[in-house]
Length: 493
Image 1 (spheres, rainbow, N blue to C red):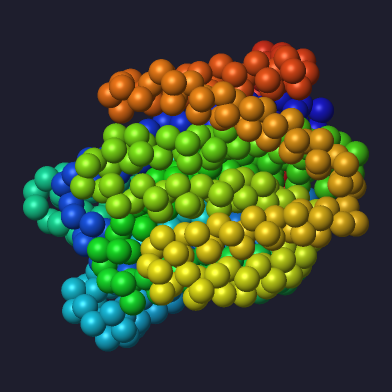
Image 2: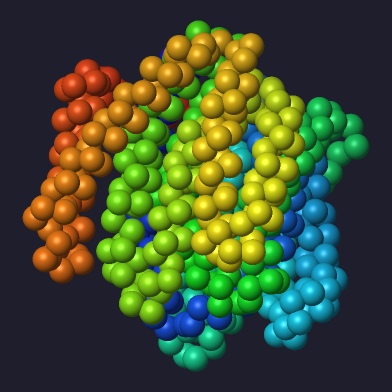
């Protein structure tokens, strides 16, 4: 436990670096595929993934989180959880096949049958690697996990682009989606020496199954709340409208999603090890939250500020209809940056039930917003989505920290520094952009104005807000060496 800080910092750096590589891979594949495929191709697959994505919430049944969160766990318990995951994966694959005719009828699109059936195979591939990944996460082996994620994404991207170049159309997106979990699981089994035994009836997994069940239900509610608009747009506005909305949402969400994914896994593992030390847990959470916000907030605001150039450079001129949608969705992504890290806090200290209650409140709010905005098309939905989340963010944060070791003052101080720095930097960059950069080409304009914003932001955050010592301390922590050869055993992991 003494070297937890160093493990957390190194794990965080490894995950962020990997997510940085993954960001460019995802962005690069999006740029290539957006030019090789039509919006309707993305819309066809989006019609299926908006629905089968619900099944993805059950792909590990929350059992990977239970494995990470437990103080101790035995080989028999993990083996039993592994076979439960395999059973869940098989059921989800069969459900995908069974729901295919329903999607064909609902969307009145016969091509969706085989797309749905093919995507169902990914659930079985994923199930086989869930517990291997969870064990590596418990052991804080985030460098290994990061390498595996990058390899899987690289190979799946190559599969998708190769299929698109060969004229497979929307099947390129299907091939890429199935290849990702298959390659990831192969790598996990190759790296991790743990081999599951037979399931044991005597394994005490009841509390873990309940924990996983609540976490899964929470994920289901959140997924429906955050993805129902895609189903509605596909049904009432068609594949092309959904394709434009979906690419705008994906592009604006990539940076924040990658950073949350990178930091979230490390933060959850670290906080779980500190669940019996509230003061240290508070310190770790607030510092991690500050670090995450210091990156995600300026990226979200910059996305709104430079939306025209970002869409033109990333997707190409035929996607200009995505610009207003992209800009209208940026407040949504900013709110996600503020509220999503709270989930790590809940589950690490066993308050997964509170997260479920929050989800049950936010779900009807955003669904109502979709219905209100739907008559106005993708732009109306994007505007309503962002508006309701902006109204909800303060109550969400206040409810999140109620009764925990974190006070409202702690949270406001943590959020205030990067938020104020972002606002000042964005205002300065906007004025400079209007005065000097309008005649430049899109890439030069984005580089110039974006560079100005970065410089002003760093000056504000490090010197005006006095955060220089905080980041220097993080750098010093990275230079420290953890004890050589130290690795948790399965019984103590």
